[in-house]
Length: 59
Ligand SMILES: [Zn+2]
Image (cartoon, rainbow, N blue to C red; front, side, top):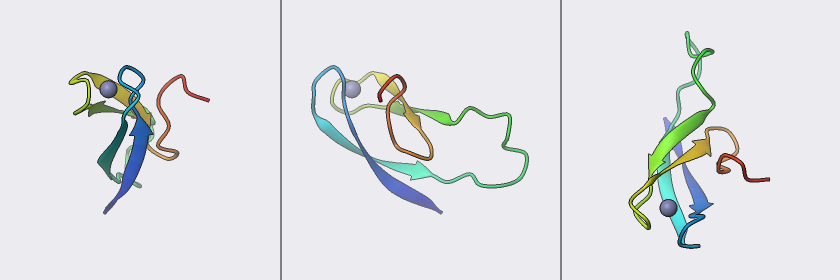
């Protein structure tokens, strides 16, 4: 299970696609809702919200 998300790299302005693994249920409550994603555009990591697909700090 998982889903495809699209986010905009804040450094390069490029749209980046990423497959986000879904981790619903069991004992996952303490885990951050933000997932670290390796960005192919700038090679750094961004934090993406698991539910909304938005970047950390983005409105
Ligand atoms: Zn990036």
